[in-house]
Image (tube, rainbow, N blue to C red; front, side):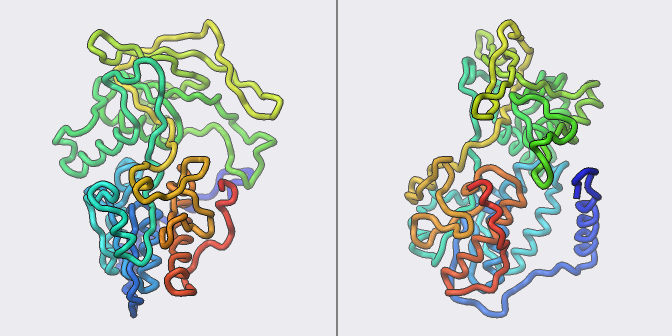
Length: 390
């Protein structure tokens, strides 16, 4: 369980079991024996949307999933690099759902080329599962320079080109021979590091605003809380192998992007931070004078997290938001302020893990089934795990 020692390799064991099951043909599509006559529209085909679609289809409802990209999968397809999550694994699961008679419609951007009001009128229920896709930006001088990109744009373009043409079409942001700086840590930052290395960058720095975590758990971070410790992920290991050191620089704040006369990025200016505990117990950052530094860079990738779902769809549907800028719906109910419209995943919870999105998809499916049928036999997590975030 990883209480005081590293956890056993449960993930590897489960991967081996499911791979064997697919190889032997033991995993089969589930076609419901009867239909309820109810129709459900799901907007978004990420982990929350796919999980809900599977559950609602099993309950006998007709499910249509709308995806604005050219492939089904959402974050699973384009947001996570292929070397970390093979798209063949995503595609084999999608084929099962297709064989189960779920209707998938790609290249359909609800809110732009489809009026969401029509979905509300034509379907008995609608589930919004669009994720948290608005990236946090850097509002500092030089931000509009050529060579600064959001991390998800970088990762999505690379994966799409890889799947379409094995990178032959050139339709992606290329880090080859570039001095790359990734601003922001976390999984997305690590994925950018690993992708830039594969593209052949000439140098690589990963800047994080937070201080370096401790090697071991702190006393105020006991089990079963997620251990806040210094981790070395695959991208960090690959960078150390390529460039001889861990790419991360901690407690750094970017103050300015430096550009040439043609507005091309040439570097960035940072200052060191000192983190102090305030009277209310919260950590506050203090800039350390005299620690300013110029770093060379001609490609910067912003991986600083996400601030909520995109608004164009929600504004047209008149869905209310909470103070965190996510869709306002209580965990366990998943119901928005619009009759018959539900929500699940990162667009409700905020940016999180895939397993949380799946958890929410199952919970929302249960509530939609109850809404349409009066009761439900669908299974869903009963513990209100989302209370820690709501």
